[in-house]
Length: 382
Image (cartoon, rainbow, N blue to C red; front, side, top):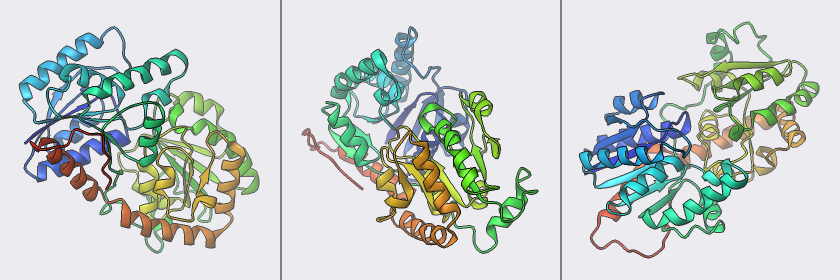
């Protein structure tokens, strides 16, 4: 079997999802091709995982170059002769489906809906395309039930599959006794910090989607309620300079890090104040390390959390006072933090293994290649 993954410019979560899928598929003896822009980490990571990497120079947004990008995809797919085309995110989904038009079984995975990421006329155009383009998706693969429900509510008449995101549970492990202090000692930015300093970490691309601007507005109140508390933003992105200019005291910008585990082990609480998501990886990774999390009530968040943690872990999006209150409550409650972190770890280890996710994707491919596959609208779930 040959699987052709088409990926637009991505960082962070989507790149890790694709790399994890490639690694699992190569282990199963599948020939895996990844077509993506030559910039960024994904070409290197995908090649390391065993994929044949093909350059696809494409931008993140539709524009005057779209026709040429579609022609390039068409050539790459013809050369690769895949059995399955798996297009990741909106731009790749647009170009890939225009190139293939249903001639090869095609999985489109939005990784959060494009019409949530833009406003006004751009949102209308994105939604119109998704309603039209679904005819060329053999399956539309969502990473959470809430992502599927949002698509249905927007009028997208797809043949749905739902396979929740997973993470590498052999890597994201609890820090153990004394691990917080050991992790801080290994990070130059933190090793001069007094041992009891309360520390919150936010891992994510610095962009409007991830909502770090909301977190910075909340942080002034957190610092007032928890004197000496520190916030670390781990990641890079287009909003970096604007966020730096607006950051209150007590905020550290750690930049892009290939290895985020030490930052999770060093923290007391993890936060992700996103405006929209499909199902974010960062909270899963934090919970697997035994950290309590505070997340906004957007796509996939409720499904990520252990039952009963919503009052402590879930806040409305774009609500700095609610976000500040939730963070302050955890930072001033060590027993609560310990209990929530333990239950988060147990839940994540029971529900979010990337090997289970990859196996479910493999079953989906096999279903699509079956000569008797059903053509009716349906939903599968891990």
